[in-house]
Structures are given as structure tokens and as C-alpha cells.
Image 1: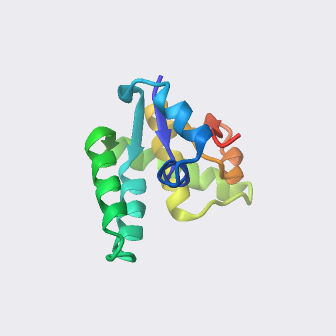
Image 2: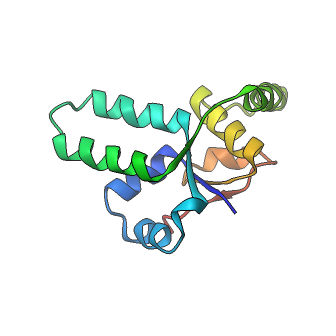
Length: 131
């Protein structure tokens, strides 16, 4: 089973949330992954904090150790279908969240996030490791 960490879960990890840290430490690294969309969000956060040298090092080390999944045509197709379905129901997500949801859904991963908006995506398995 693959667990795709949402950006907010990585933030909890970086802030050393004990529940998130315990759960991540209990799993083999090959069961964890990250969407390239979340990598972009993390790098954006770092770009806004160039003086946070320790944070930069910690994020770089994490990105070396976790499998970052690239977008491809299959994910793009899933994104298009998912976005159209959600818009039809009037249940839109933010664009980046929608891309992450489509990515996790397409690769069959459980998305790890405490963002309740992801529960609108019926085909997506979501776990909140902050509780």
C-alpha cells in the first residue's frame, strides 16, 4: 500500500507533530510517496524563506528519501475527469488540491491529509494522521 503525503502532512512532519512522526516512522519508506505538486508547494514555501537554512536542509533530505511521483498523461486524464465530476456536483477543490487528489487516485495511493475538503472526492481514500 502506498501513502501519498499531502503538503500539510509534510508540514506537520517538519514541525515534529508527534502523531505524524510516529506514523511515518512506523512505515517503510517505500510505502510513502509525494506528488510532484506537493514538492512544488514545498519548494515555494522554501523560496519565501531563504533565510531558513535548517528548514531548507530538512526538506532537501526528505526529498532525497521519499519517492516523488511525476505527473504523466494518465494522471492528467484522471485530473480532467475528476475536475469535471466535482464541478458538476458544485464541489470544487483548489486547483493544486485537485491535482494532488487526482494524482493519488490515479496511482491508487491513500492520500494522507487533514484537509477535510479531500473527502468530497468519493473515489479517493484519505487518512488523517494528525489525530
